[in-house]
Image 1 (cartoon, rainbow, N blue to C red):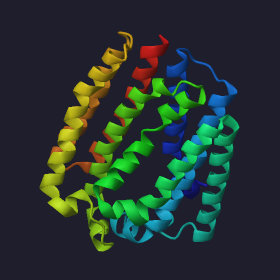
Image 2 (spheres, rainbow, N blue to C red; image 1 turned 120 degrees about the vertical axis):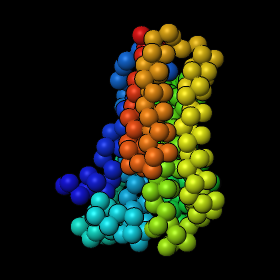
Image 3 (cartoon, one colour; image 1 turned 180 degrees about the vertical axis):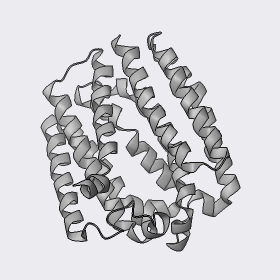
Image 4 (cartoon, rainbow, N blue to C red; image 1 turned 60 degrees about the vertical axis):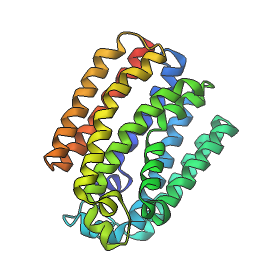
Length: 274
């Protein structure tokens, strides 16, 4: 059970579902659980599950190098590939069926997301920047996905932009963490292309540049004043992540960026609902 939870990245799926719900609440301007929004959240869980397991199936060789402690259950042999493929199909069924219950447009977006997920490890990750951008766009999508499900996709654009920006910074940090395995498997991630010091500087600047945009974009979108004190906390956590990054504390930087994402999501909801 624990290995299955780790394989599907259960904690990330919970955050993704919360992001979809938050996007719906931001669009509606109040907290509610209409059927279409619930179906979209379930769809997000399914698509995320499929994408995460496919990534581990394709990255098993690199994970054995990057995670020698057995953090990846598939690479460590604690879950069979057959079981992993079953989880992929289950995720596909849940993800696409949930989207289809919302609308044809939701289904098309879900299929597009799924296509990018399937292309990521075998194609996009080898190309460096395109892979980072694709993952950031997909990982930041849940608020937009939720807003789309309630018929107000425009309300999800600012949350999507901010979430994607933070995810891009975190992806750059993860590339630094995975450099050894990526070299062994022939990938051309940023640390491999420009060197580790240069990649650290790029990731640092992405973190620092996020902070002003976290205030500018919601101001342009006329979020309420309650957004800003909570967003300031998220900005502080991002700066702490940037500090950890410069000190080569990559796990701490990655973890702090994830915390900042959750706080930022709360700020966006409060800025529209309260």
